[in-house]
Structure formats: C-alpha cells, structure tokens
Image (cartoon, rainbow, N blue to C red):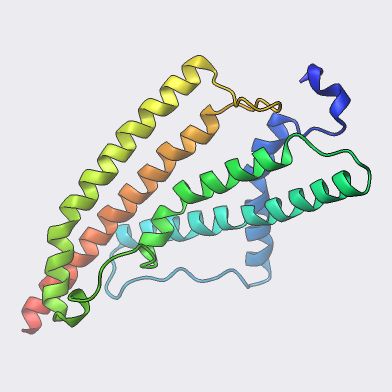
Length: 212
C-alpha cells in the first residue's frame, strides 16, 4: 500500500479483516460477563445436535450483526474527514459495502433458525400441525438442492479468487478471496441449520402422528 501514502489514513487490509474477526467476540464476551447476552432459542424436545447447531446459527447471526457498528463508525470518520478536514477517504465506502455483503451471506443460518426467510403462508398456516411438518419435510428437498448448488458455486468462486489473488478494482485494492470465503462459510452454515431444521420437522411429524 506504499502508493497510497498521499491519501491520509488508509485502513490496512490486515487491520480490517482482523478487527472484523475480533470485535464481535469482544462485545459478546463483555455482554456475557454482564449477563445481557441473549439466550439461544431451542425447539421443544430438540436433541443435542439440534441444540448445538441452533447455538452456532444464533451466535453467527449475532456476530455479523455487530459489524454494523463498524459501518456507523467508519462513515462518521468519512464525514468528518471529508467536510471538516477536506480529506475524503478512499476506503470507507468499499469497506462498508464489503461488510454488508458478508453480513448477507453469513446471516442465512440465523434467519432460518428464527423463521425470517420469506415464504408464502396463505395455505401453510391453515394446515394442521402434522400437515405443516409433513410439508416442511417434503419441501426441504428444494432447500437442500439450492444450498448444495450455492455451496459448490461459492467454493469455485473462492478457489479461483484465491488462486489469482484477486483484488478489488478500487484504489484500496483489498483482496477479494476472504469475502468469497465468507460465501462458502455462509452456505455451510445454512446447510447445517437446514439439516437441524429437518431433524426437528421429522420429530414434530412423528410426535403429531402419535398424538393423532
């Protein structure tokens, strides 16, 4: 980054990735120490595997949600540098949209756990408990087909980017492969959450059949 000496303070690439890795852990550790860390929701009768996956899904969503604080701080820094010191940055906007992109792909498991994904409920909500669980089990085929393609495609994107040491086209020129690695991780997390959800749905179906 020697060619960026005339731009004022430029966030080093290692500092950007390192801070994103440790900042949420610090905040979550402090919150846990004060007893204000949100509890992880668990389905009734969930087994050890589902509870573990639920914990991973919930905490991964909380982890990336805390990144939003960095965007606020970064844009505040940009506004001050631009309008007070007349020294606009070359990295704040790019760092923030990369951050939001990673949040999007990593929060899928959290969304699945908390029922935040979009679906058509017009008919579904009118079904019995047993029928809803049966629909969930059958339609999981489409979910796993989508996530499998997502995982395979993101893995190819990551390996190609890493092999080429791909960088962004902006002046900051940060490496792209860590971002694409997050696509692989996000796909893996939502696949894991989907497997846990399928196990829950099967258990709900079996329980409903016994009660019928």
